[in-house]
Image 1: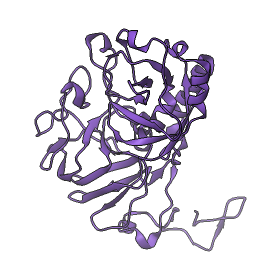
Image 2: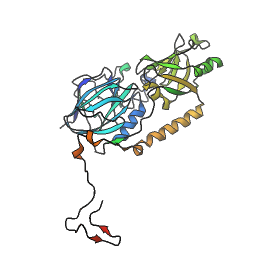
Image 3: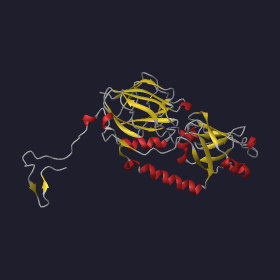
Image 4: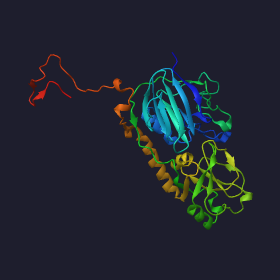
Length: 360
């Protein structure tokens, strides 16, 4: 029987996302994929999976029902979640979900994008048109390119076969949801900005504007006006990629994200390094962010450290401490460990160390 996850109700911007479609830039298609790739890696680590897509929930989740018992993991921006009418579920953790149970995921508490991962992953085309269909090597929705769509109530997503594994595992929550420092490197057009403008960029606090989507995020300076480049009206359109910081006609910076266009003519004052893009994408509206230039060498070193951190995530997962009074599945656990020999005298001593027949 096909394992499915049925969407009973859903927020306005929930899509299926993996690492996207690299390699199609020359054909006019940006990579797309998850806005927060660290959250994607965390979910895979919690479920012991190396690949797989997740449901990306922008701002609000929904209600989901599994046809079979399954393992789930919740990562990214913390959201209110519970199974049926049970206790709130720990975030950045894995959980067991019984067959027929209803997973309820509400709004974000902080950040922008939450992620729902399933043991075995989302597998193959679903019962719902345009959802889960692999196109150019990925099932990810790329709304700006007209690939896939947001989920709707009534959608049924096919699930892959879960090879099994532990639940009740957790990872520390990386503090990337309320702004902070963003490291950037010079771009080809950075020299078009004067030294004073570059210094002002780094000294200016910016607030994440509510107007943002998977294409990019607008940054509103708290002080001063826009940032002007020399000869900016004569710049020819050229290739742009996620992380580029474009200055629009009024000098307002936009940080490009996963579904950005592939060419653009606005001047680029710099580029956010990939390890810091999740912090930009996840910043709550109104969060304060600051840019800091680093060298390309330091940027490459930061990327190497980030890659090593992601590789180590499976070994960083730890058991989730839960309150027994709130555990609806308490009786499914082995509460007494050890081995008992029914033929042995429990008070007899055996062996040179005097160990009892009843051992822990």
